Amino acid sequence: MRKAQPRGASTGSSPVPADPIDVPPPHLTPRQVEVMQLLAKGHTNRQIADALGVSERAVKAHVSLLLEKFGVPNRAGLIARVLSPHNGGTGPAEQYDRYADAPFIVQVLHGPEHRFAYLNRKFEEVMGLSAAKLIGRSVREAFPQIRAECIESLDRAYRTAQPWHHASVPGTWRADDGSERQRLFDMLYHPLRDATGSVIGLLLIGIAANGA
Image (cartoon, rainbow, N blue to C red; front, top):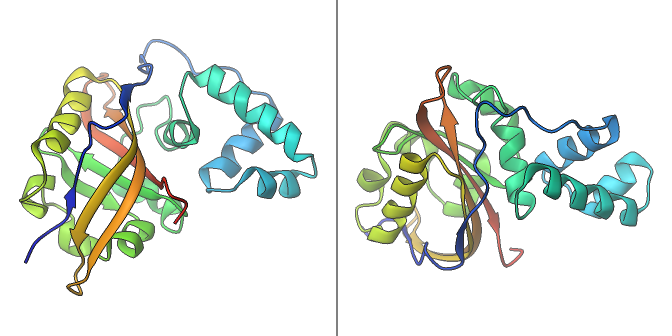
């Protein structure tokens, strides 16, 4: 059976500023912390405005400042910074369980072989694939027909310890029920480090680029 085949990972790809371990995270106001927390839950600007009792225009201003402070190109980058805090984002996969029901895809890959360590429910919903069947397997083992440029993108992010953003990445794959699925994604690859600063894995954030 044909497995998942994310395609064209190099389309719209660009490096985003690295997150050096010797540089502290930017100072955030209490309001900016609240906005970041709601962004990480996948809330829209309108939803954040309603939750905080402020105008949508004010939320847009906060988001713009946060993008500038963290040096990331989009909301996916901000989400990655929340999921991958300055302490390295390491530890057991259970630490990501708070994002089990997040409305965006969260994947944690460990090691240079990019073995699945964590997949949230949104991944299962969108991909139509069981996380339990993928945990412990490498991306290449799980998806033997994956295109070479996709693996190269993961290898580059792991090797260089530099986050990478890929806009409007098209994917075509076959789900567990045999149906073929297609989707466009905005993807961000963010390195995960151990206590010494060595890269031990990657955090992948996926948001449907077509709003689906």
